[in-house]
Image (cartoon, rainbow, N blue to C red):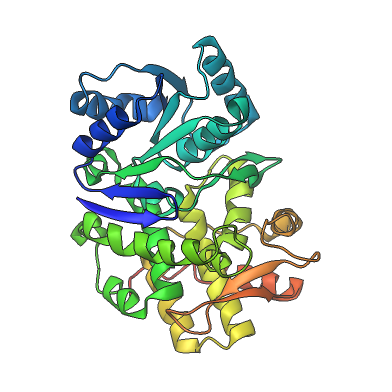
Length: 359
């Protein structure tokens, strides 16, 4: 068991169940509510129940998927909490991926002006990313996490046992955030990741704590994302726009798949804006395209992408802000790029359609 302290809460990593049992007994919450979606109800809830057979709890269930991370789902959660007679001394355990963690935490933070919540992230993506830092919210008007709050959980409990419940596509999606962490902060880890030729060769649990500690570094220095924490958004300005447009198409993308596209585009912008060496641009692009399928960007919808980018939460004074790479393992925040350069970066990604092997 490893413990990582982030401000006023602890992240428990490993065999979490004895610690979780003790935590719930010590805190003596008046009521325990577990929030799941259709997927985690089937695959993760049985693990939870088997590990804590004596725990009495109420269950709230919502549909799975980013498309349900909205006000309608929040209304269902809030209504269920009222129907269950929940009070502010109850606790909600969010058992699921990033959608459940973001939305469950948001609903708990706003219910009766705030009830306690615990995060049990069950996907690689949510474990290395959404579980740290207290950013909570829902999508609104196709804007990713357009409505939300900063609020820390009582604790986060992370167990790699849930990887067994994940399809390869979900693991690949989560890996995008691991790659991002190495590119913005740890050049040695980036070189280590590049040695993986097949995802089947990766010991996912071994990547968990190093990635968490990178995010911890940025969150502790800038908990409200006023400056340095924006570094964590490398790949996300364009990636969120790609994800938002795809959400309304016949081929929606997982978060990590969209962020991989965003990282390729923003790596190219790093060359234009921050003089990232061309050999590193090629190296990063080839690696990402060797892992993630190429999804051509329809440039006829460029205005739609641009509209979503203009609504990005990092923007200041009407300018689209990027977090870019002067070199692999380093990051520069609050970088503005022209519309022409943004279009050029999307075209650069499209032109990589024939790349299909890891460098």
